[in-house]
Image (cartoon, rainbow, N blue to C red; front, side, top):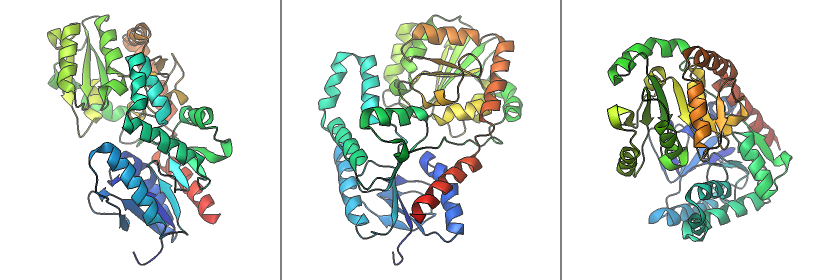
Length: 379
């Protein structure tokens, strides 16, 4: 690059259609329109680069070497741009602004140990997790770090608890949703055809689970809850997991695959038809800073059941516009689903869900990011 960019975005793999990139893309485009120079520092990128790219691709084998090598090489490359504002989506200590899209690793390990038991405490001694915990400590202790962007108050509270970050260094910017694409009218238009395609009868209740990495997203608790629900309650699982065959076998052992009660649909390019077919989105996640699928489902007028360690609890009022239960409370998850099995109540909760997210547009989110960037660039 010949010119020094005003703002550098750091991400190992940059794709224009990735979640994190979409969240900040509108704000970055707005800044460029005002003459602010934006560049991306990445190991690899997909598609036609929307911004100038600073390549940073050190050799690596395995995920530990991959992350540690990139962090070290990225900080070396950034020394060439001492006057640029640096926003990172990776845990590196040489950034001014960090987006905590993955939440707090220390908290994730604590939540996973609740499921796996005492044996999971050994994870803290694995080289990979030891590196991530050390990288997290260095990042939040860095005197250069000016602000941490959190997409939920839940993550902000965890940063205060684990790393004693002050309120001045935390900015909570909730994610936005395309409220026109994800709309009750569009859901209604697709519903009948999609349910017929899936073989869902009118009197059956279809639960929808959307997420990759089934353990983290809470599929185990959901399958166990399904075992205690009427056989007219069915489940569609959309997403991918490296151990999917094991999950299919386990569902069979639980006895919830009889009469095709559980459908493993794999990853789907367009999830909107699945929202249309479903009656309830169920995501009792062990830990998720703020699942985008919850915003999309609520925008469609679909009731949601999620967990106390989902950042979506920020906008959910239990028993009003959705339900929030502990991820390991199988009886509580089951009771929430049962409450939503009544069509009239389900419709009322869905309307309240839609009303909640209507102000949470992509434009509103982009404005919040742009205001933060302008403040820091001015400094």
